[in-house]
Length: 402
Image 1 (tube, rainbow, N blue to C red):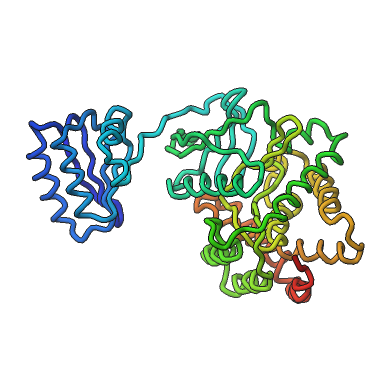
Image 2 (cartoon, rainbow, N blue to C red):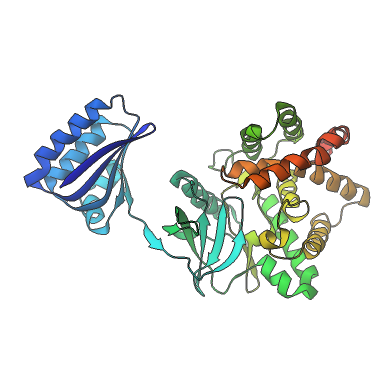
């Protein structure tokens, strides 16, 4: 039996390797206690059981003692044999216990989508996998799972993940992945790219997906977070890239957006909608929140119209076709409203998109320097030089009532 104790920022990690049985439990307990005393006070205590092959009742008592002593205690990377013991003895109910994750390979898999926090690959005819960027935490992965379930319960056709796995990225780094079952599904981008003659039909469906979502009122006591508050935090996060004056300009736009209680996807570009037969469903639910629809449409405009970077590689179709798709869809979204109202709302959406043009940099701290510099260069063109106009449009936001 080998025991290793190490620090990871505010977390202390105990790694157990081998068989934790009666013959070694007393010595192991003494060793763990001695090492933890050196590190007091301890915030989070984690037991890494990835190499723990067996645990006896005396070993279980060590875990129970640690759980009682440290409020934020968890056991992670537990192999099936050991997890079965912890589950049978009821330990999974009295402390946080996480199974070891399956390891999958994406070598040779078709890349079908790219987003701010990861990439989507087709594993086989039945399943797809979203691979998160290196550095994504398990908490962020769990948030996406939770938001997918919340949206599904509220009535949106949403793909639900059935497995969390680990994947080695192309750069050789270990990443988390979410596996989804989507039989013969294609991204909306792929369908439109290969059937441009049907762009009008799919634009209407795309608009219908937005309208269906924005008709849903989110309960105040639910788990869906405030989209506007998240937007503010994302703008503040990119202060590392922009001067405070620029950050204040973006925050003034955000603060002008009216409150709302509607369900928002906040990254509903055409690669995040999957077409399965006659049904369209959502993926990439990590940013779901509640708020005013203009925020959701502003985010989508930022991707579909004013995207920074390789449009076709990321969105999955030519910019020309993507713009046509968007213009048709937004007209269908506002179908039935007077022409002057539609014209104003299009201006409002474009202004809101100015925030997302830059706040998306907060989704990862590993974007290439060239991308960051491109966004910095565009700020004057898209915001600073038009700021008076932008503020005038912001004054009209209150006219968009729900």
